[in-house]
Length: 197
Ligand code: GTP
Ligand code: MG
Image 1 (cartoon, protein in one colour):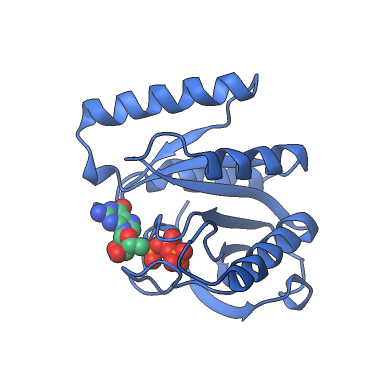
Image 2: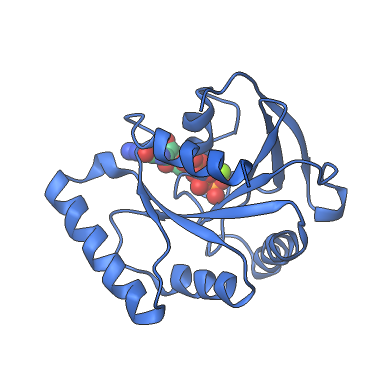
């Protein structure tokens, strides 16, 4: 799919104030600093559409981007960031949870995981929560440039094995590097096929 236009629409702390749910929507979620905002920029080929930072906790609101006047990409705050206060963290988690559970045009969620880490409880619990609520999701490994090809293979295998202990059906896993601009097409293809449904 060709990205002809990608524009920022608005940022909200409340899902009810988000744009009218009249187009398909895809959200990017994962631990703080995993590379959600960078991946969105890579997908739309715009360096600083979504704001990125070396410091975790950069994205603090539900950010809507409109693509090709036809669908929305949503950049969410990260979960599990230990350095913000408990009340702040709980506020973000409620904001994310309310959004994910209530956003009627959300067709699929992409859960991002740093490819260097073995399966973390916080990620697995988050995915289990999505599964229990019937929210479809795909998994995206980020920062693949940090590992060699054989290490990527080993991480993919270990992660898939871990997931298959939890579920009969393991969701699709994409491998990406925003740094090296890798892994873009398969994700856009997945979005395209959702858009067509
Ligand atoms: P929060 O909004 O704070 O939750 O973070 P985020 O998940 O949006 O991460 P962000 O895109 O801001 O990136 C965090 C850091 O990781 C930045 O320093 C990015 O440059 C770096 N980063 C993101 N993707 C990649 C990647 O594919 N490879 C490498 N090497 N670094 C990356
Ligand atoms: Mg971010």
